[in-house]
Length: 245
Image (cartoon, rainbow, N blue to C red; front, side, top):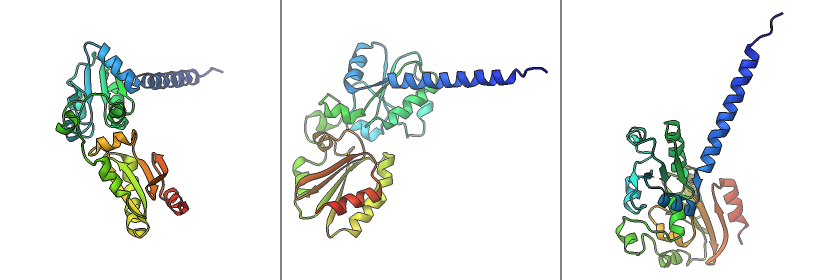
């Protein structure tokens, strides 16, 4: 009886696929750099491309010096990126790391050899007080968007204040938006819901150390009683609000 050569061949293909996937995952992990590492490697690399994959509006409000802007969600990302030299190292960032991670993965699949991502994006960059260019207020060292005094005024109430830092492009933020609107309406007598666009209010986001989205703060009598980074379900949010006396 002849032995089938297909089973060993199929096994070999499976092993190759696993090794390839593992290699890609390791490459991605190794190329996701913390802000300090990203900055250091960027400055030490002579011939490179620095790519900002946020919207043109975000880019105009402040970006890393020398960055090229190609919007990940702009509809022509692949076509624009294809014009770049695949042999050059590419440094990619966005606001918090989500879009840059997707863009970096796409670029690797297109044949770019070295793609580095900035972990935490511009939120982390700004939280460390690092320089950027563009945006009149930011360039002058002033406040962009809501001030700390404006924020403090929002807490001047006997209601529970739920503060949600979000971004329009943030998937988890979008999932939370409908039920936060419901809470704002149904619990208006006891809860004040304040949603703050982190893109439009970078100074406040930085001062409050918001370095990922969504981030939720809950205050009672001007005191912070709870905060959370990441998605919160409606059930968990309601349970937390009801637990506050």
